[in-house]
Image 1 (cartoon, rainbow, N blue to C red):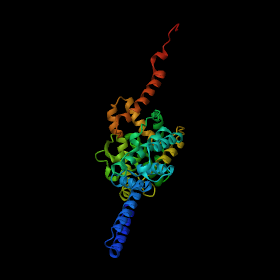
Image 2 (cartoon, helix red, strand yellow; image 1 turned 180 degrees about the vertical axis):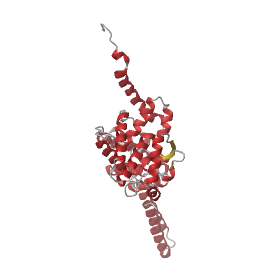
Image 3 (cartoon, rainbow, N blue to C red; image 1 turned 90 degrees about the vertical axis):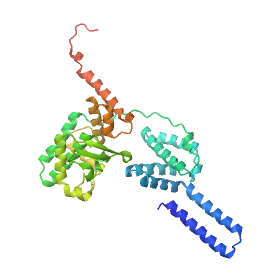
Image 4 (tube, one colour; image 1 turned 45 degrees about the vertical axis):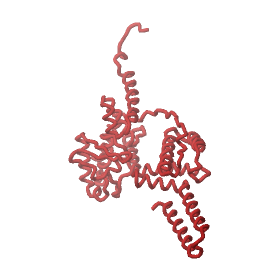
Amino acid sequence: MPRAIKNYFYIHYIANLINHLYSNCLPQSKINVRYISRIKQTQGDKIMNNLQINIENYLDYCKLQKRLDLKTLKAYRIDLLQFSEYLSITKVIKISPDILETYIAKLHQQYAPKTVKRKIASLKAFFHYLEYKEIIYHNPFNKLQIKFREPILLPKTIPLPTIEILLNTIYKEYYNASSHYRKRIALRDIAVIELLFATGIRISELCTISYQNMDLQNNIIIIKGKGAKERLINICDEHVLTVLNKYCSEYNNAIQACGYFFVNNIGNPLSDQSVRVMINKYCRLANIEQHITPHMFRHSFATLLLEENVDIRYIQTMLGHSSINITEIYTHVATAKQKTILESKHPRKNMNIVNQI
């Protein structure tokens, strides 16, 4: 039970106890009834208006009713507690549009636009909740006009030859492994990298694939994406399927015990950080200077499909984007690639024209 509700019941219990004692001593006293009623209302209002209590209640609401994932809940907690620490007041009803404007201006001084955008979104959602629960009757965000241009940062991709070198390095580690233990680890690492590139899934999605959601008989994965939205992804490459089946067979007992498809050396679910460390290790072995992250496989997946003239709406579905506008960022990358191709590959470059201007 949330702390605020416990406190609320406790105050009512105390008030009822006082009411009982007074009623036995002075049963006809209207003053006592009014006084106790005032205690109930005042203490109840203090609880309902307390910013910290409302933040905790909101996070409980996000976890239990909206069923947001732990990563999102952690981000909400960080953003809301940061806002709470900034304020000198504790009552939510006293938070005005001016206070929000000043706070947002401070955020712009400290963080990149993308981070500011996320922190504002966290606050907006919180105040919408307060309005929905009738804790506040006037949402201060309704009087704000927040518009700022977020610079377009092109997604970083991995050149196809680099991906090829990386995969060859991991396969080499597998075949040259000096022990069964090392061979087993390399097999899992191959399965992880192959799946990242074959499907374009997020690293958080890969690490939380359950055993039940990996249907290798029908070559389908059920992915639980952002906002608890599910989507189906087909695995169509025979080599990738072979690797996944071999991995599943080798790690079957650990997978069954853990419940997740990808497990670490001690049988726990594989973490995001473990995959990053894994990629860095193989990049060093392959002498790849480019810094490669798991998410770059997702960018490369989308960009390479666009370059092959795949309809952007299909790419949107495969990536699990809620809006086509998010997917369209990859068209900028494809355009940049077009420029490189035209500058280096266009046949006009090799023509021998006499007396050019």
